Length: 114
Length: 226
Image (cartoon, rainbow over all chains, first blue to last red; front, side, top):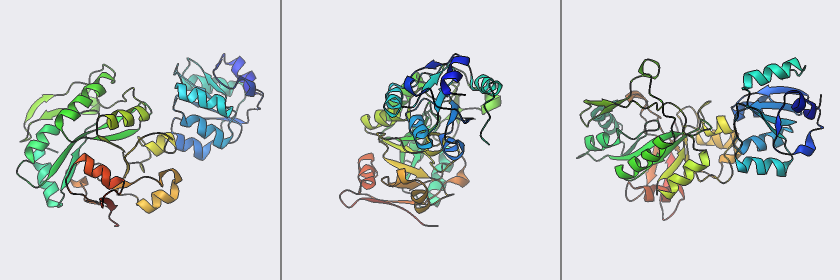
């Protein structure tokens, strides 16, 4: 399933890099500790978090993630949005909590990275 | 940890400088400074601020007034919630002898709405030092929460705990290489106070410590090996 299909099915709001939604999602990972994400998430994963700091973009670039879903109505900082557009990292936002989003992703058949 | 015991323990460790950095608050700073009066011990007023990324940052100043001005800003960026003493413990404000003055009813054990960059910039503008706290810890630390030191944040130094060494941290985290280090106790109990960091400075002031961090004018900072 592509990131764009995920965004549609979960009614996510695409904040950045709308041209990069064709990426195939290889799996999912959720954490708000970026050090854990760096150690665990894999290329092509969609990452679910409520962190909004610009470092989330750097982590996504480093790991070549498909995109980042920012949950619970959090608004990524202006610097984060700008960096994500520059780096071509899709940031998708939702009012739902991380728990709900992960449940929805699982229902779509996206497996957690273990 | 009441003021006279903090001072006594600091003297026992032959410390010349300590900093009082309660979580999101500086209400007990003046009492410790008062308790240290007459002793050869400098007490730097400060605070450990929790940012919205749940990163702990140490904010150190020269005067109580600076710390309390900063506290007013921090309080304005905390949620308006009351502390639950049965969950988080009672938050005491004490005098120089350690006697109870009042409870601090504000919920302090939570995040401000500041980003790490905002805290670092605000503290620098207020002529304080902003040091990333216990960066080797697996939670509430710059490296755990944000993965690496963000570009463009004005941290004066990195603090590590007794559980690691400067060499180890620099090896594991290239983004730390440019930063000076201190190693301190993050003491929540008297027994956790430590004397691992040596500052070569002329006066125990923020300006001099800042010079030591930047290795200016012969000032320097050294973390002792175990």
